[in-house]
Image 1: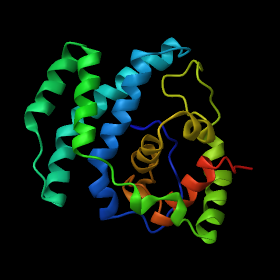
Image 2 (image 1 turned 90 degrees about the vertical axis):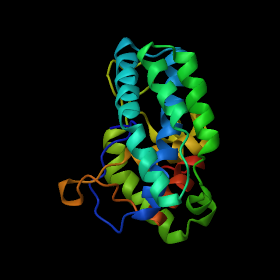
Image 3 (image 1 turned 180 degrees about the horizontal axis):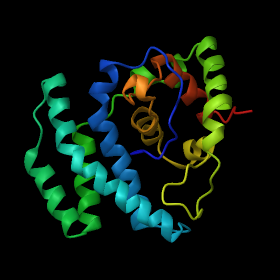
Image 4 (image 1 turned 180 degrees about the vertical axis):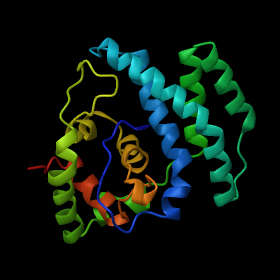
Length: 206
């Protein structure tokens, strides 16, 4: 899973084209965060480092396709030379150069989080988010930093408290997967995202 979040088995309205427009900016934020942890691993286990390297490799492989999708949907021009430099820098394992290029691209193509704002969550959104957390999220997200797993599923409340809010949103958007019935598409609705952000960012998990 590209963003390090557990699959969601729920089937609901989904985010549709709202998610399509967010995929490229979200992936940039996720790669930026993964690079930061890889460059400054602190208490990461060797397995976690291996997992980060693999996830970044996979994300960069699909980044140009996501950029083309984003350009088509938003009528934006993509800085292809930056993407090419990104590929070269990663091939050379120049992590600081990769980090700089990803940060530059993220500033150029920011994730518009306004529509997903936790402040827009309704009481029903928060109720639904609590149900999702209890029924799905807490079953997978039990790991702590340093766990000997390639792709550990960290506790979501801790993730929300330990990373920039835009990165956590990006991981909710790109990291949650559906079932084969939804072609593995993110099954969360706009209200689900708002409710989950409110739940985790306010530390209101039961």
